[in-house]
Image 1 (cartoon, rainbow, N blue to C red):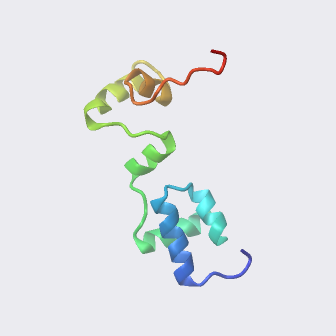
Image 2: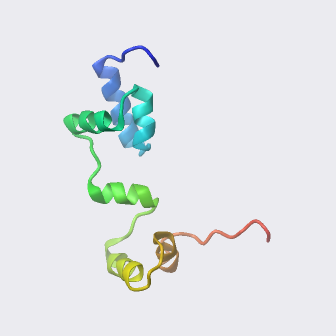
Length: 100
C-alpha cells in the first residue's frame, strides 16, 4: 500500500481496526503511518480505547467488577502474574500441555 490513501478509506481502516480489536501496530502498518500518527487520527475520529479497555486488550481477558479487588490483591500481595491471577479466579481456562 504505497499509494496515498484518501481520508475516507484511512478513516474506515482505523474504525474497522479498533472495532475488531486489532493491535495498533497492525492498523498503522495498513495505512502506512506511525503509531503516534494513528493515535492522533483515531482521537480525531473519536474511536480511541479507554485505559481500561486498553489494559483488557493487552491482558487478553476481562476482569468482572466483583472479582477486581481479589485480582489486584493477588497481583500485589501474592505477587502473581496477570495470567496466574486469572486462572486462580477462574477467568481463564487452565491450558494443559500436549503430553496427555
